[in-house]
Length: 468
Image (cartoon, rainbow, N blue to C red; front, side):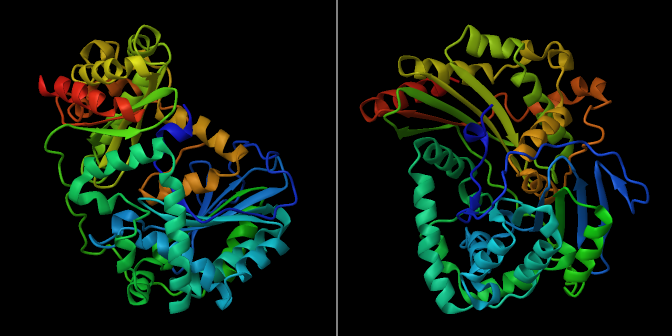
């Protein structure tokens, strides 16, 4: 599975590379729990400061590197209908307003030999630095200054909005990226603003300094934030540094007290989306509205298991779709969300078989009985183990901390000490809870094809869906 096929787009600042040590040296070593830990939990050492800031440390002494990240539980899911992209603008603006000098964060990071970035997604916004571990304390101090001493100015907003729009335009230049975004907009309809971290030229016009300040006071408070540190560090040292640099951050009101997530707009009927591309093969992408972690947690867990089974290289589903079917490759994913998640099937096929591939996959997803007859025996891999493999890869790429922050933002956390799920026997009992989100349910079917084929392919796929 390639991240580019399935991962939803994350909106981030341009990466600043001023690191002077090799980045590929880091590799995750699962830690044993150190003596004297304040709280041993899922492969980390955790503490919570008096102001409510959670601090999570994962030690890895295989290379003299560390990642320091601060994250807030906000993002697309906290946006209003007319302000998609607000959290993304805020992320950009923090770097501009650091010490009231747009270039100062970069200069201070260069002194620490650090790579840094900001990432906005549906459930959280994060700011992180990767650097030699000897500079960890200074990185914690720099990020503390970034998020706790905020002063917005009109000129910064005026200068940064064109940068953000250019960033969005670059994302839109890729046909697969355009397909994913167009499908998402169709899938979520009037609720799209709760899923769209980036925004567009229309919604970004509604972002004002007043709104940014209101947003800051509500969501950027320590009791709605966490500090993650991974790498060649000592947990006790991190705890002390966190208290020193974040301890003066004043606790705020619970931003979600008395708040309920608005219901997501259901998809009324299946729809077809076609994006033109001159690539020599077609992308086929089918999306469903899936269960949400807050509204249907049992079904969300079941959907994660179902994805494991369908992705298993030895499964009948894979054989029928790829080995003996019209796809060159095919993967499925469940991107969990609070109110609702997104179930995505993405594959590639020869242009001559694109309609066949779309129809075959859509028909198959209306009746999964034959593919699940073996229950969990169809897959020796379960969610936590897949997450562990992903974590190993991410640490090698120095993005483990952002990944863990994303899990934290949506109310989960990866169990690195116990990656094997000991309760596999229950999976078959709950798979029905996942299937109800797929079988017979409206879906968005998307393809990329050359322009001359677009209308013909659209008509044929729609005709196939109309027969149901």
